[in-house]
Image (cartoon, rainbow, N blue to C red; front, top):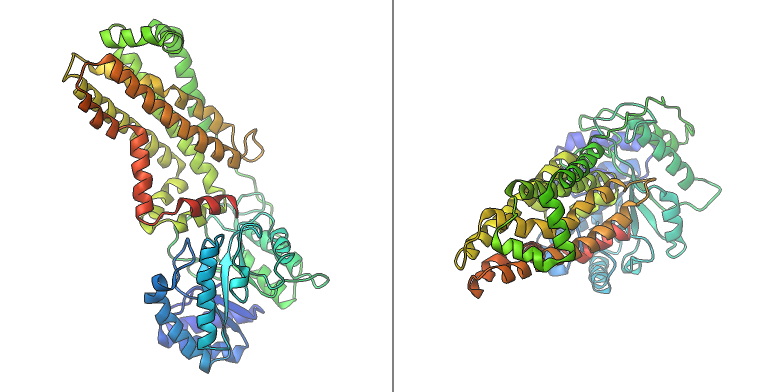
Length: 515
């Protein structure tokens, strides 16, 4: 799997090095400019290589013909012209990272395949899918579907599951990522040695001469990409400067048949990090101390959960509404969401599916989320701080509207908004109990977060609005701006805006669950 240089000389040098490894096919992630493309095709003819070329289709969904035409038409015309002169160009890629789980998208791929066959009988079509065979529905819409197995923990099993249903299934991307900052050694997660061992194991099993093998296996990738949504994920057999990693030796040995076993240093496992755990349990300790030392918190807790009428009376009268205690509780709410977000970022950064989900988002969104996944602390600060700002804004709007009908202090506003947020305090212990080998798996945590988060949004918003209506004498119209700034409305509006700008929640769900 190769992204060719725009300079013909550099591209030809790299192609010669690829051929020297024993490779018989190369998948180009895009068709380069005319001069470079012609030079690559000519050289591939002389080297006996087959070229698979991805058309510039959008990530995330199989494109409609009218959507893809501006870029794909021009590339297809050039590719067809080259294929007529160069036997090495054999396959055209129609979709990469697309959602091929729906019949409508399969129809679009089928129409593109028919169009390409009509234009050139020598060209075959493929798409690259990350989905499990039970979810993908488009295998018969192209000539040769290929699997995206980057980071998959059991790539051989995934290919065999597919082959039980589709004989022509190949592998379009096989490999795992290297963290440029990781130390050396097999005991170090995402070290260069771990990448090499992954490819050694996978390729040895897939290319076993005693068993059925895929018709084509593309290793992802020849060299690191210059631009990546997750800079800590580098798939290249060579770094951006062209320096080979140990995996390059593995691929050369297995492809050429000159070496089957490889030795790498063990290294030392990195020490565990417990900062997030300490912060999480620190929040729990602060909450316990606040409950033990503050009579206001103990009495208000009893009123809130057992006698809500007395709680609203205290809120309406403005008595026993401790500004300091409520401010600290609000800070604990923000801190709890921050710890949960940081843990979510840690878990997501370790999942292969995360990269595909980011790629399916609009570029501006994926670019914004990438740093948070790379740096969980940043994600925690952003989410926790953003939550505090929005809750304070909501509190301020409620106080302002309530003063149109009665006296209402900021301390009352804090109490009104903060106490219904109590379910958020349960999130950190659940998040910290999630992970590989932990009581809660990441997938189950995601479901708990999705379902529980929705219920908490409804609960908080409805309880605050109900209490506001019961304890204030403000005109009814003042509810409108207060409702407009509520968490439920803000989240709903964000989802609508995301859908308006092409974010398909169903595609994101399928990428997260069925890959």
